[in-house]
Structures are given as structure tokens and as C-alpha cells.
Length: 170
Image 1 (cartoon, rainbow, N blue to C red):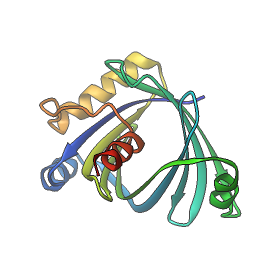
Image 2 (image 1 turned 90 degrees about the horizontal axis):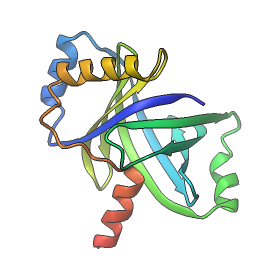
Image 3 (image 1 turned 90 degrees about the vertical axis):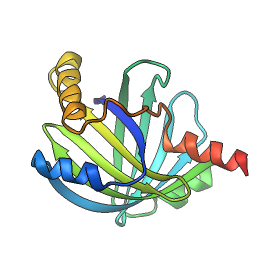
Image 4 (image 1 turned 120 degrees about the vertical axis):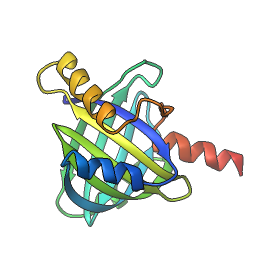
């Protein structure tokens, strides 16, 4: 099962981060429209991702209370586009997260600039563990430094958790 190291922070705007991404020559990969349907499961998270017309199911196992957010994850892709109906018929939907994502890559780190419906703007980093956790931590710390993120408060929750909390506040 692949593993990555993650960070999520809330931003007022993407302007300064985009300037820094340009300065370090991060590769802009694509703009994505994503809908994540989270299903009630235990342990971990299970979500169906609908992204620019394609569908995949993603399983996460992660300790949200740890100082570092290493995630074990697994992805299965669907070719027929029927995943949402299939899973909705079987499982209880816990939350739906809709977002527009700008995806950048830098030194094996995926950088997401997310505009999340009803939540706001976020930056996420996902550094894939390829050569051990200490190597991933080193690359992760480098991108945090280059993007000047050390002063930001890390959010140790998934978008699912944030959506559920915002619905309870209403």
C-alpha cells in the first residue's frame, strides 16, 4: 500500500503561493473539478472521487493525532463511470466535498490549491514515500520552507471532517 506525508492549511488567497510556485518552477499539471463522496466506514476513510468525468475509490488509513500525517492509501479506478450509483446503493453517505483543484508537482510532492465549496481555500501537500520516511520528510520540509508555510497552522482533519463540522454548526 503506498504511503505519503500530508499537510493542509487554510488560505485567504492563492496569490502569494502561486508566485512562490512560479519562482521554484513547480510544474502546473492541471485544473481538476472534483467531487468526493465519503462513506461511513471504520477504521479509516473511504471515498469515491469523481474527477473530470473519471471515477475512483480511495481508502485512507491515517493517524490524525500524530505530529506527522503519514497516510496509507489505496486507489481503484473505474472505467464505466457507474461507481457512484454502485456505492450509493450499498453504503451510507457521510459527506460530499466539492472542490476545484489546481495541481502542481515539485520534487515528488503534489501541491493542491483547493477551492472547496462551503469551506474556502486550502493548500495541501502530499509527498509520496519512495525511498523511506526520512527521505520523504526531508523533501516535505524543503517544499514547506520554499513555500514559506512554517508560520501557518496545520489542519489535521480531512475535508470530510470539516464538512461534517460545518453542517453541525448550521
